[in-house]
Image 1 (cartoon, rainbow, N blue to C red):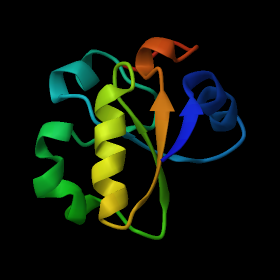
Image 2 (image 1 turned 90 degrees about the vertical axis):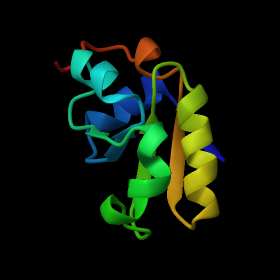
Image 3 (image 1 turned 30 degrees about the vertical axis):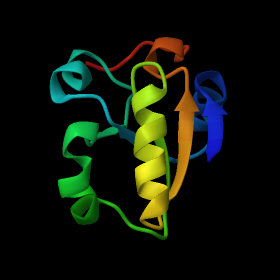
Image 4 (image 1 turned 90 degrees about the horizontal axis):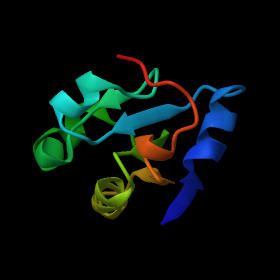
Length: 99
């Protein structure tokens, strides 16, 4: 599984447009998330991933600390998606989160 630190993701977002999926629950996402992230909770991922994602696009997957995003990456990679786990999650993200 490919990985990136939250700091390196932040740096890349300054110069690149990336597809970022936040797999935390809706209430967690609403309380604060990385700007531009799409919310697709891990709990509903098996039912909803096919409606929202394109296998031709790489996705950076983030959660609170990195555990749920790692599980989401394993699931999506097995389905043929290009995924990169954001280690440390939003807790390690070095910028203010969007509410």
